[in-house]
Length: 195
Length: 85
Image (cartoon, rainbow over all chains, first blue to last red; front, side):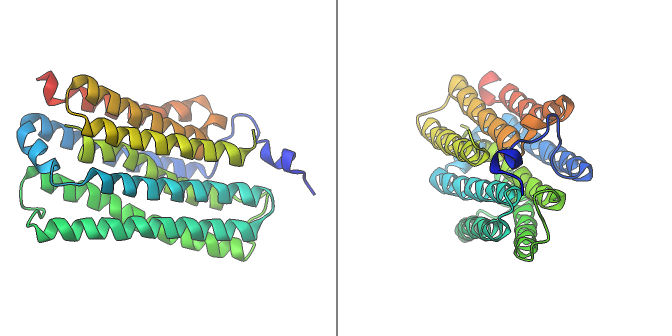
């Protein structure tokens, strides 16, 4: 049986998860980078339209969306730590809690989408909202896929499919979720805050 | 510091920077304010990649790639801010 100090110490220069997942993450980040820079370019071309349109968004809702995603990311990361300590049951509960926090994001985002659609600010309204719906909608689809992955990982932890020595699949799945967080922390200020 | 405490510390930093972002955004507009908001986003990206994604233990190339992504975007967005027109 390993001690907690031993399980906490990661070997030097170790890339967590599978290498294939890292290449997948790089590909996803490249696509998001193109979308984000497109948004920035269009904002440069018509700053007044973007400032006026952004005023229709509630940055406090944006903050709540951010905190729900980041909390979910924390719980997923703690789940990996729990498996490294051979506490698979606790890891399953942490992943389910992370899933719950992600559900809060989904509810808030759907409410925001409904509110904007009700005001007629749909994807055809203007350039800002075309890019808003494409950018946040594409991210939203990634959140939904990430939630399926979290649920799958929770079930695998419940079945004790991972242990302290073998949990590369868990690390890879959780890395995907952190990528969703990473994209959001760049997307959030650009879409909701920057004037 | 245990790994769990480090992760919670990262989350606290992320929550603080997110709140700061909204407060800065509500205080007006301008190039310096925009740069400060983008710097906060960079700090958050660093906490996620080094803390949550554990890239602090990874080979240097991967750390540079994942830190380079938000750096490139923040630089691009800053250069494209209307205030620089």
